[in-house]
Image (tube, rainbow, N blue to C red; front, side, top):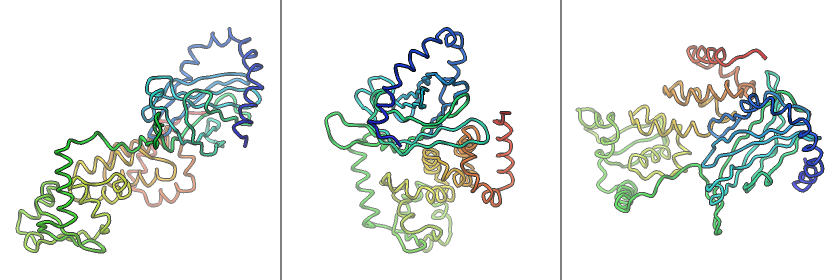
Length: 362
C-alpha cells in the first residue's frame, strides 16, 4: 500500500498526461452529458454512500453529485490513468469552512453484478477540507460498470480554535433550559438515593427501588398494575427478571429523564424489548431510530430479526434496502443460511419479494 507522499507523487506524475488525453476527447464527452448527469448520483443509507458508475472508460474523470452524510455535503471523484484515483471531499460551503470534518472511513470498489470482488481500503482518518486532502490510488483494472462504497465510521467537527474534536454521532440534542436541568437533577436524586421510593423491582441479578407515580406516568402497563387489585399493587413489588440490573437501571434512567447517551446505546436492544413489553412508545421509537443509524454487514441480519419481532417497519425497510438495493447481501453469504433456518416464513417471503423488486438482469 502506498504512503501518502507516494500517492501524491503518483498522482502528480500522471496528472498532466491524463488531463491532456481526456480533453482531446471533449466532443465525445459533451455528447454524452445527459448520461453522465444520471451517472453522478450517489445513494445513501445510514452511514453508507454508494456510487454506481455505469460507463467509465480507460481514460476518464468523473465527479459525483453532492450527497449528505452527517452535517456536510460530500463529493466523490474518480480518475483513471495508470491507477484508479478515488477522492472524497466535502462540498465547499460555510459549514465545511467553519466546521471542517474529521472523517474516519473505509472505501470499497467492486465490479457491478453478482460476482463482486471488492477492493477495500485501510481505515482512513483525515481532516478533509478540499479535494487535495485525500486520494486513494487503486492498482486495479476497474472500468466500464463498477461500484464505489464509502462507509463513514465516524465524523467529527474539527475545532478551529483548538480543543477536542466532537463527533456528530450521536447528537446530544439542544441545550435544555435551567429549570428542566434542575428537575432532572431532582429526579436523578430520587432514583439514585431512593427518596420516598414506594416500589421494589426484582431483576435477574438484583433489586432496584423506584416510584409508582413515575412508572405509572410513563407506561400504561405499569399504571394498570398499580390501579387494579393485582399482586404488584398489594406487595409494591414488580418482577422484571428478563432484564439485568444494569439494563433495568438504564430503563429507569430513561423514564426519569436522566439516561446518558452511552448507556442508551449500550442497552438499546434490551430497552427495545422492555419498551415493547410495557408499551412505552417513545422509547420504542427512539430505539428504532438508533438501530437504523449504524446498520452494517455485521449486524444487519440481527437488526432485521429484531425489526420483524417488534414490528419496526422503518428498521425492517432499512435492513432490506441495505441488503438488496445496496447489494450487501453478498457480504453476508456465510451467515444467511443460518438466518434462513431461524427466520419466520413470512419474513423470508418478504425478503424474496424484495429480491424480485430490485433484481435486474446483468
